[in-house]
Length: 313
Ligand SMILES: Nc1ncnc2c1ncn2[C@@H]1O[C@H](COP(=O)(O)OP(=O)(O)O)[C@@H](O)[C@H]1O
Ligand SMILES: [Mg+2]
Image (cartoon, rainbow, N blue to C red; front, top):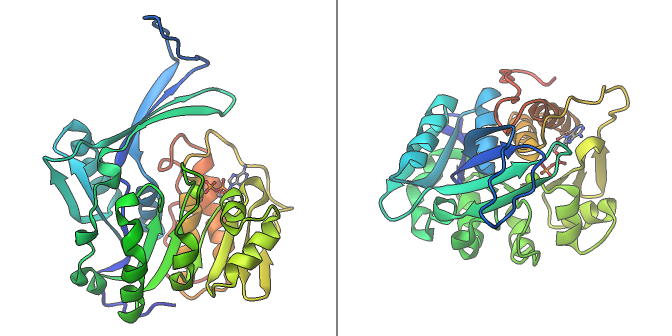
């Protein structure tokens, strides 16, 4: 558990900053100048790190982000939303050299989605941004969207070592690898205290089909491995121990969409872990955050709001 409560932030991350424009309707796009009507749309802040940071703040933690936005209307929108969320943005720069990243998603009523992404500011944070002074700002360093932040891929091993030396604890949620090669994760796992893949990611990274085997194998690197399993909750692996949540008494949640459920789960688990809670209590708070986010569109609107500064649930 990290100490240093006098630092200004609990958690600091590099953010994959972008906006998401989500259109809803049972429509398949057609070329040939075809215009089709959709039912509705919404515009929301995108990115895994932002959703995790937003949820951390709603749980009473102090979270900050490092990143870039374009000098454009979507950049203004991102900055405005981050300020509303109460996330620390002193290190979010507005750049003339980059355009704000954009994800355009078409969401069908059956829950399936097609997404077109313009990367822009998502991967605009260069290795030079990882400066020594950051180590004094936060107690914990969280990496999310490991594969989308490709400019930083080769920098993480040395940066995480510096975090360790400076007394920061560390966590990682890779999210999905669009290239499905899963390169570079094993190299940094020995430097990660809490690894938070979903079941498919855990199996792909471990190179096995069984989630339990994957969790155990990934835990051989030394940290706690928390495997998120959608409706089946989550399991934590540490050394030879496995902790699962008993969800049999839970009502099925109301599901509008699953955007950000994993990132909200991460925030819940990490909040408990940084407060020194036991693994089962951390899993329970992570699960409550993941479930809550399902009930509203996008990753932010359904987030659990609860100051958990004091005691375990
Ligand atoms: N259908 C569901 N029913 C209940 N809880 C869910 C459901 N989907 C997600 N969750 C909760 O959200 C967490 C993260 O969701 P998951 O889809 O596994 O992660 P990711 O978004 O990273 O793929 C789960 O571990 C669980 O706690
Ligand atoms: Mg995820």
